[in-house]
Image (cartoon, rainbow, N blue to C red; front, side, top):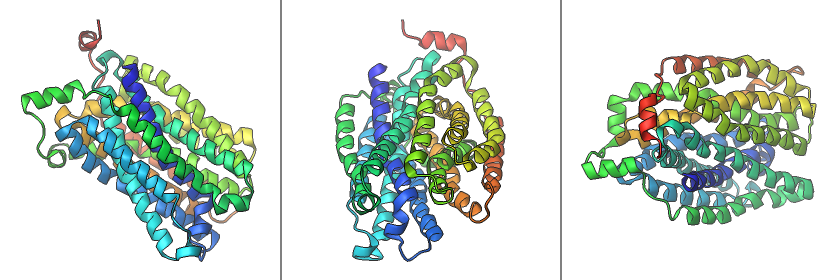
Length: 426
């Protein structure tokens, strides 16, 4: 389990490194480089628009790679998704700017961002099922939480590299070539991840399905016919997690640097510190889910998000590093109270024959609802005025309440003590 969980964590961290480095670049430099004819606000919105395309592609990647995972195994998904995302990310670092090739530059950026999202849409389902379907029932949430640590590691890697570059280069050097370095580094990381995953075994539940001839011939059709309500509920339930995370990790960076005049180094440091604590807390929250259940923690995380959004915006608007960090930290702890749990919760909600497709589509459809729209909506709501952007806080609170309602309609899936004991290793 340690080897499997480590391989899932590392691979997920690499894919999210690729995804997050784009989000940070969109907040800091992509607007003026690829949309120079726009006003500063319109350029930022356009850059966030290309950022959003990655989320739109993720459910499509879930369908594509979910079909592979349910028909041919979870293991092939881990290789194909990592390879696609890695190649697309390296290519982003090679795209000439608008000044060099004109309108072709943002079009290429859009295409590569779409491919990034397509690969990441398959990664989560494969990585989570690799650990969840190998894990003993009484510790499933704990082991399945390791891929959920991957996004925190990927975020810290991506922003650590950008932080070092912004600190070590002049602004002109960073805008000229420095922003490309993290994208090129993705190629080395992807190669390392593929090597690490080369020795992984297929999951026992998929092998059992194959041996019995019960694999789904058309997983998406079964999901649409038999589980559409469950997909919509899980997507709505998880939307708040995406909204909160990308408010902190993407919109707040742009707002802090452009509107509050805080240096990008300070903003990145505040966000990274909060993400580091969130990542460290993940397995401990998952242990609580193995003891008390999945649904109670998800409900608690939604409620905490709804209560914290106005304090978070107020703390951000102070532009004081320590207070901004506390605002971000409260938001991300509420976020991880839900997202440490869902790696076990979502697979348990779906039957094994369509699990890779169902869990991944629900998870990534939530990304469209919460992650794709939030930076754009928040940027629009925070435009103008000198006071705190209360509209952003109100928007996030409403999303949290909607997600709370969706979680309330989902069942509990914690294995019964007898089943957990039978599944525990001797």
